[in-house]
Structure formats: structure tokens, C-alpha cells
Length: 395
Image: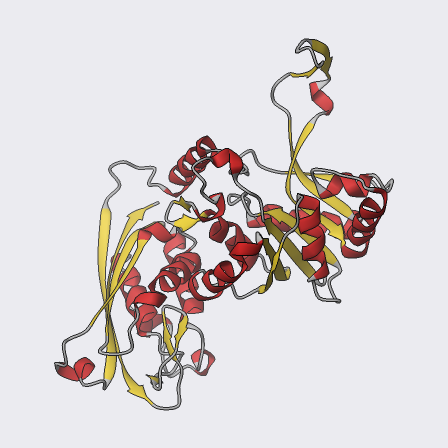
């Protein structure tokens, strides 16, 4: 699966959500719906990059949010959409790089799709040229006439409900859109346009949890699904708590990395890795809660393999270690102590990065920032400190 890219479509009007709100920005367990959808593409290793299609008036706003707060490193561009969904997809296709061979098209309002489902669609698209996630119909389907009476009952055994992402050879999908535009063909999904060319589309079994957020009821269902999957299944599971603390000296000539965010500042933190003092404190808190020592035991600063490494990568390893030992993260509370710079604008991105590295909901992470009003080494600008408390339970 070489050169896999994606187009994420989020240019709809959200009319059925009511209240004049854009469903893409509604909170879903602590994160906007759209941020959750984009996070799947950030995690999927085969995807090299993606284009996001938004309503014209939202392009600048979403560009800032995605890059500064949501940690979207693979985002190539945010482009304005068209009148219809297929117009928006076509605009997204036009913004893809020339080397794109496989393209995944996904609805931004489907935030619960799994990485494994995305990869499966990309794999089948590479093999067959076109593929879509789908689930078998559970209920009996009736075809109705204009008078509201049943015309016939359709055979349920052969009926599937299509989802996204849908995957295609990029050249095939471009051809399908060009023909649709020339012949004024309108369709509700891209697979239909490819079918109109006479090309077969492979069905890839999806999940019933991959719902599309369209109405307020959908949002409630999605919240419930995340609560069930992310919650603690043992109501009386023993809670274990760990404390983490770290401090690094501020020096010239290094970037300031906090919570995986490159914070603009004229100094950075000195250390063997990227010296992310916040993530180091979080790791120590997690390891302490699980009775697994500290980061010095697992990632010694004398080991050259950790020179300059991203602390978020080390946090991922800590998360896997805890899972292997039978622990799940309940919540993390952390505070960064620094006289400067001001960190409030970067905290949402820090929380998002930490949550993503641990594969948990961002609502379980709380990061604060404070000063010491000029007192001590943090007050004089000599260094930055961080404290963290983590709670874990037996999974």
C-alpha cells in the first residue's frame, strides 16, 4: 500500500443537528467530533497525508485548530468545499499530491471508525481498485411507493449499509468524478460514481459502531459507545495512584517541547531526549502507580538510542508496558511550573498529544500551568518543572 492519502469531507450544513451548530465542532467525550475523526488518520501508519474539505467560512479557523490544538501533523491542506458532497470530494482530490496512488474518502462526522478498518479498506482498494466499509442490514427493508404503501420487500440477505472510509485507486476515482461532472451524474457516495463506470466495488466488513453523527441522538449514542469502551468495567477495581516530578534547565539553542508541543520561546530545555519535562513527569507518575520504577530505569540517559528522542514515543512505550502488566489509565492531572512563556493556548494540544500516545480519551487528561511569582529557579527563568498525578486500575 504505497502512497496512501485521504480526503476527509466535513463541508456539510449540519441542518439535521438543529440549533444552527456545526456538528463537526460539538464535543464528544472531551474532543470535537472532527478532531476525533482526523485522529484516526494521524494514527494509521499507511496514510502519508490527508486533505480536509470544509465549508468556505470555516477554512481558516479549522486550519488553526488542526495545526495548533489538535496536533494534526499529516494534514496537507484545508480547502473549501462545494454545493454537493461529490463536489467537495472532487475539490479534495484536486488538492492531493501527484504521487497519491490510493485515496481514502471519509466523512468527518464518522469519529468512531477504527484504525484497523481504515487499513483494511486501503488494502482492499489497492488489491481491487475500489472498496468500501459496509455492514449487513439487520432489519427487514421495505420499498415504498409515493402513496406510502409497501411496493415490495427486499431480500435482506443481500443488502448492506455502506460506510466510510471508501478507498480507490486515485486515477479511478478521478475518472469517475470527471465522468459524473460531464454527464451530470449525482450520487450520495463515491462508490456509486465508480460503479457507474462499470467497475466493481469490494465490500469490507465494518462495525456497527462506525455511526455518522447527524442528529443529537447520534451524538448521545457515540458518547455512550465511548463511555462503554473507555470506562472501567470493574466497578470496585482497586485504584492505584502515582506521583511524578521532573525539572530541566532552560538553555539557549534548543526548542521548548512541552506535552509534545513546540512552544515558541527563545530558550529550550536541556536534556538527553527532547527534555519534555511535562511528559517525563507523566511517565514517572504512571510508572509509579503501576509499581514499575521510574523513567531512569526504563530509558537511561546514558543510552544513545534515546538521544533527542520524542518523549511522546517513550510515553507510548510506558502505556504498552502498563497494559502488559494489566493496568489501564484512569486519569492524569499535571501542572507545569514556569515563569514564562504563557502556556494556556497550548494546553489543549498537550492534552490531546498525551491522550493519543496512551490511546485514551482526552477527557481523562488535565494539564495546568502556573508561575511561582518570581520565586525560586522557575521564577528566575533558570528552568521549568512539572508535577503529575496518575491513577490506574487493574484492567
